[in-house]
Length: 93
Image (cartoon, rainbow, N blue to C red; front, top):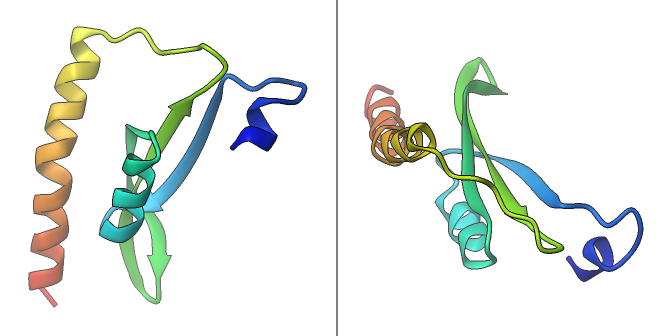
């Protein structure tokens, strides 16, 4: 991360996307300061199945996002809905 943030062009944010059911990766990213950004419904194709993803962001070099009420509602909804949707997909074989 320091090789990104300490050299020109001095980015303000780092984004990544991950399979929403990849709990190990999600824990790793959260532990390293990444925050949920957006849901990516049916973003991945694994074999013949479509799978949901999500994006995470880490703001660097002194930048941050302005949080709106809509952002809070969206994050709350995704925090509740994404795991439930993943569990339902796993149980539906």
